[in-house]
Amino acid sequence: MITTVEKVLFLKSIDLFSQIPGEDLAQVALISTEEAREQGEEIFAEGEAGDALYLVLDGKVRVHKQDRVIAELAERECFGEMAILDAAPRSATVTAVQDTNLLKISREDFEEILAEKPEIALGIIRVLSRRLRDAIR
Image 1 (cartoon, rainbow, N blue to C red):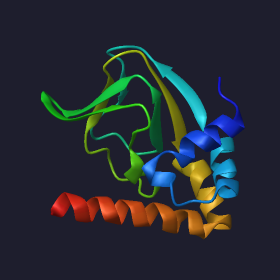
Image 2 (spheres, rainbow, N blue to C red; image 1 turned 45 degrees about the vertical axis):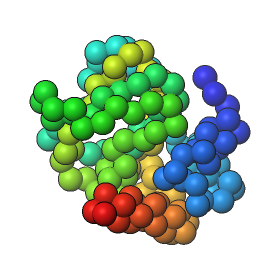
Image 3 (cartoon, one colour; image 1 turned 90 degrees about the horizontal axis):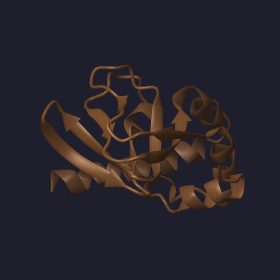
Image 4 (tube, rainbow, N blue to C red; image 1 turned 180 degrees about the vertical axis):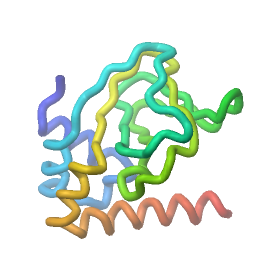
């Protein structure tokens, strides 16, 4: 189990949270929970309601639509980030490729923080906008 300070440092190293000040990340760290997933275990399935963002502490996950692999993500990468802002159904399935430790941030808890600190949302929106622009190019 990692400490709150370690979670803050980890979050700061993630692109999605890189623009958010450390004191604000402390609030995010407090609502994050650790989850261990075994190799082959499904984390969530395409079509399920999006309810959380996940960050890979260690291990590896595969993002896929049936047999088509969209991405493989490892340490310091995140997935499910749209669910932190929107409850739309998941657009893909994510499965642990190896034993994996994750940090999970639920949308419900995150929305409470956003109500108090809207600048956190702005930081995340900037990163998501940049990702979208880069994907279109």
